[in-house]
Image (cartoon, rainbow, N blue to C red):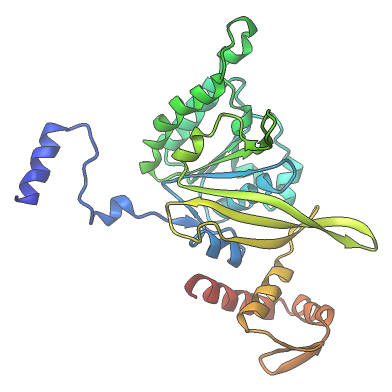
Length: 316
């Protein structure tokens, strides 16, 4: 069978469909948005994929919105466009500024009902906005759910299952669609976790990260942060499926990038340790605190180390 002639016949018979050859790289390939943390970029195969639908899920107060804000900050700093669909009516300009977001270049939309949120998101995707964040699916409730007398079982799940296919068709314009959702305990005798909007959303997502809080980080017996575990629950776009990493998150300061870079450099052997002594490019330093001070006092050296770590992390 002549493939070229078959391709022409299929196009002619289905003029409204996007029919492409498998080697049409301009159509199928996609860029990624870096998290700014080498270990997270490695976990996700290079960053959050564009032209794809990704999800951050987890319990409350574990850093889901923070990670989303870092992606938004990266996009805006690189001259791109970002839209934040605030279904929870909780957008905090001061908090986002602390996270490095230039809020003067961020479009924030606060829909009242789910249908508004869907329409806004669909328009943004058609425009090819670089990243569209829905915070969160838990707040994307259809108007039917507000009518108690006519409320049906799984109304929100049915709404999302109808809405997501409509949104995915517009990803071809280049957007990264990112939705945040909560994990909650299900009702029943056997413990299990579920998400608002049902589990159908998992089938539509191309990449899904679960964010967890592990142990606390303390200073003088005061809790100042926690160990943030990021686990890859699903990927159809590269990365390390079901693998996980842990990064230190400081409340009010975000991910401690200096600590992350130093720890990863130790794991990769870029910095070596012998007892209490650390060696980097022939320079020996006693104690990890003094090692950290070395990089704090020499930001160019820290940047050089970060580039080495990134190179090893992505290509190892």
